[in-house]
Amino acid sequence: MAAEQRPLGEVQFLTVAEVASAMRVSKMTVYRLVHSGHLPAIRVGRSFRVPENSVHEYLRDSYVGVETA
Image 1 (tube, rainbow, N blue to C red):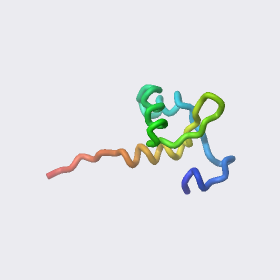
Image 2 (spheres, helix red, strand yellow):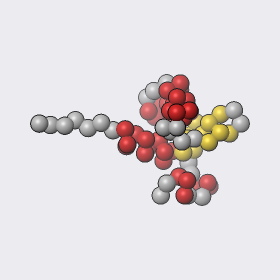
Image 3 (cartoon, rainbow, N blue to C red):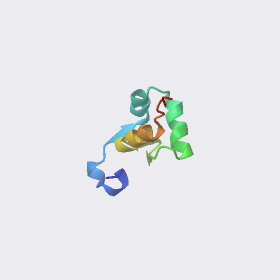
Image 4 (spheres, rainbow, N blue to C red):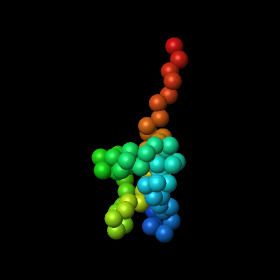
């Protein structure tokens, strides 16, 4: 079930720093993904929170497999 369809109390949110650590990228990369719309997030005050499920979906959709001939 997508994060948008679950009650907010059941959605686990991650900070930008937590997303960056999980993805092993910089926080600026996460901010770029959020601002470009590739990674959905909500704004809480001056910071962003990213649904954990959205991070998993983004990584799953971005996976590049190695094709064998």
